Length: 216
Image (cartoon, rainbow, N blue to C red; front, top):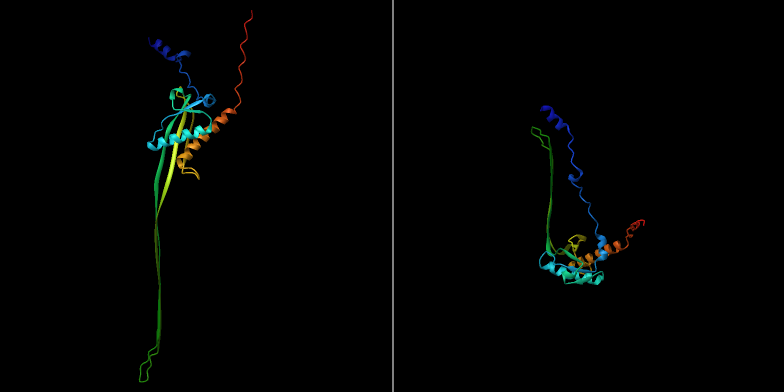
């Protein structure tokens, strides 16, 4: 009985090929699907009331880019833009305090004397004393408040299967002729146009050879 057990333990532990787990499939680049997108729906963005305003700006910016037809009917769209956005107005408060204090002092004293005794005695003497004191103090404090405006958005373009074709994150503190929100919307539209142009210029994949017809 012991020999049978040792023989079974010595057998290699192998599994049939069909029982082995298959390796994970590599991530697939779906950016080429941009060329098949004709109609886009921009979904509501998470982030509150300011996100709703940023959604309208993104729609306008994409409409001006002429890349896609923008629709308000999600059922007719080839792809959907989803994501989150926020438009923040806040105040930065900077406080600083500097102080300088200098103190110094110097003092010296010297005395020489000679003494005599007698009827005609004299007591000549010589003494010197010096004293210098310097003091200075300075204190300066400042409080600066700066009002700032910042907007950001992170969006993705999703196909009908729910797969992400393209995504980007943009932020802005405002531009020369645009508000922060409008600048973010323009950056998203511009980035999507750049990606669309990149995909359009990619070389076409090689065509597979046609299957040989069977001999009669």
